[in-house]
Length: 241
Image (cartoon, rainbow, N blue to C red):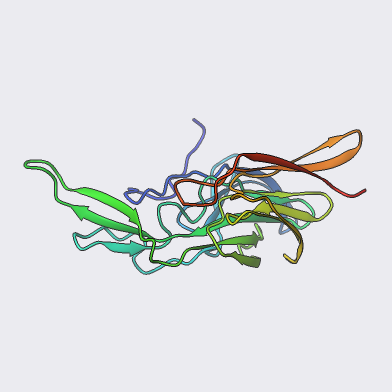
């Protein structure tokens, strides 16, 4: 082991580091910074020197964080945001060398944490649940690694659990949990195109080329845990020449 950094010390809230890390090189103060970025369930994007592990910065919060964040659960229970599903969960973050920004898929889905008494002679246990009466939604955020600032952000009507994909053509593709597959301008977030797949797009898209033509493909399968519309399709789209 060369180095490690514990993002959430003494984690009792389910804030495991689920999103894949991103390696990137970016200019800062006349130098090239070789970094690794990690989007967290607690709602911040962290950047580290990837050789030494030195923390470089923490971004602005890309989802709401309430005053109960990191509090110990009580017997009465408390609703904490971000919840155990994030923040940023498993969806991969993308990076565009053109804009120099990272693109983070975020979820606002508060979790209720409650301390339940244990059986005779046993310690208490923490029980978590998602309150379906509480509003939930998602965010897609463009974040600059140089200062951690959010350059633009769009809100989705359901939690965003599809990763994003940036292309050399200045686009960012991602899926929404309501079934929409979307392309935006990576520079300013303007919506350029969308397609209704008929099921929750909760997987990251990929791009590839065949005989010189570029394609983008994505799986639309929904998500049983979060009650997103189910399906079983993999759909490919050809980009115009």
